[in-house]
Image 1 (spheres, rainbow, N blue to C red):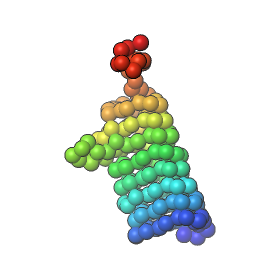
Image 2: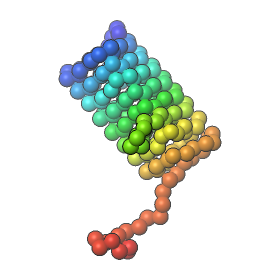
Image 3: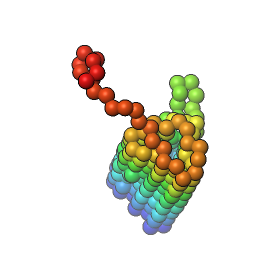
Length: 168
């Protein structure tokens, strides 16, 4: 698209389409994907096949997206994996968040509703649908969120073990 900037080291393969005013930072890999207008990708991001990104999406450093639809304004700023997901407009993923889409026999989809906030180091275990305005606390592994306007927290008691396995 018009006014798009593709910096050095980017690879664009397959049936990819890039909108207007997009910025592909250095080292990005785009495979058979569609990037909406005014989106910023990278550096060093990887869009695997069958991704569709809406307008104003921000995909940051070392983020991988696979077979996913991201609505307008979605943010996944760094070190995250969004695979087999449908993400509503305005949702945000914190550093290290992962959609866990494979259970060793089947792939499952995760649906993240509009304006959901996924904290740092979160695992969303599919099939899962974090509700509209859901918040998932940092460090959580979540397999069920059913209500609107909730904070999901998943953590157990903290334990320290010495090298012999004894609890301290």
